[in-house]
Image 1 (cartoon, helix red, strand yellow):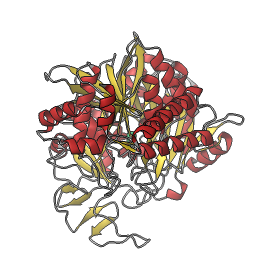
Image 2 (cartoon, protein in one colour):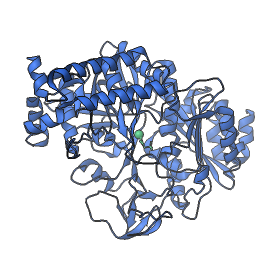
Image 3 (cartoon, protein in one colour):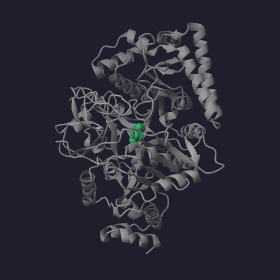
Image 4 (cartoon, helix red, strand yellow):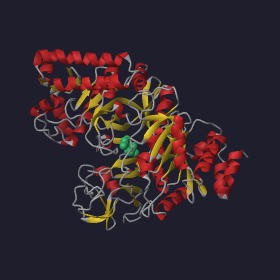
Length: 631
Ligand code: SPV
Ligand code: MN
């Protein structure tokens, strides 16, 4: 027996000891022993992913009160996070950087030794009297070139239960793998909890990423984006692994889109910052969903193939309505395993903002007993439910879950889309001139506004490179270059599209599209992949022809699409686009020392094209001007 296993024996029941000993990997035992030494749990529970162990995790989440079984529907529970713990915490999430290593300035970072001392100091003895739960997960389908193994130690039954809904079980994979060290490690503690089982030490919340040891530390937080280690935390480590091995780890949805015959299916990946339409795109009615958050993409036989890293959805519930979101509505209102978070509960029923029903005037929410008009400690009114209230559910609960979800070879990508909250510049959908142009002008130049998914002010415009800004763990220029290189090696490159669901009228400030319109854009992309729709060349990319969209609007949404709407939506706004290029260039010049030359070259080209068009047609150019040029 290795010394780590021996040291752990006293904290393990005989059956837990047996489960851990079956994993013939001293590196695993060492990690658990080290974290047990640090956190001093009273007991350690090893989850072997058996039905019995999984049921036990769920039972404990409820019996400890981390999840409340107050909802009438079978399988539904609710978890509440603290008022200061309702989103990903950018300020307290930092990379630990060894001395002498350079990292892009825009990335939150600190000295590794100092960070380790601080966070390990905060975690010292933090699990006294509690159980440390050990979970084994495989990211991506099992037995696949995509698979990455991960271990998490946590004292939260809620976190552990969430992982059952969101990830593929990995215990057997660890048993099979034998001794190896290339697995991701996460150590999490919710810290001190109040009577409602909510983390209270939020001033001491820390999420630190130590890539030297492939380890993530997360403490004094429960919000899943900060605590479910296999989500955005392991993602940061996967980005580094991908970078060193020549593949891509992306903040992307994966979906299947049917062709006009209803049979041909083409797969798309899509990068959107949080709360910018990623999940609702992946769930478009009549299409199939493979994933809504994180994808790994590899070059396999010179084609781009992708898998969903996860197997569930941690989705925003605000604005989910019976009429517009029939698929997920059905899941959320039927029996089955779901963890709701930060919603309002009244008489055993869940309520959320924008659900299309009148909300009760009182109930239980993240603030405890809630009543209309209740104020927080700063005097601000507490809404019935939090904007970032969510649900966790396994993908297999959805009727339109794609059958390839667990295919070890992934799916071949026909196209990739990038979209942010861009009120002013980009048209609703456009296709890049080529791979490089798409990666640079749509991906690396992605601009958006901050949303409620992260703690802090909403609506602040920012650059969010490939929607990865919060997660990127390698120098930013290197990331751009990795993407460029990845595509250059492919024989069959996915087409690259830019989408913008948030374009507003410059005069009235009203949105120019309805949320349903995104369905038309993806259907147009599908036709483009198969050469079945034309396009008009503009300075920023190829845009759709009116006639094609008109047909699609009629066929898919049963709506008439007016020429007037088309012209408003697809007018090229030269001053706004020049402004975008300027902001993007400035951001990269100030923050990114290693941006490839191609990056500035592509922006320069786009600027020249815009200036040339401006000289000829003025500031706001109807798509019809460009259509005529092409004739
Ligand atoms: C996001 O905010 O991008 C999410 C939710 O997908 S989480 O990262 O878990 O906060
Ligand atoms: Mn996300």
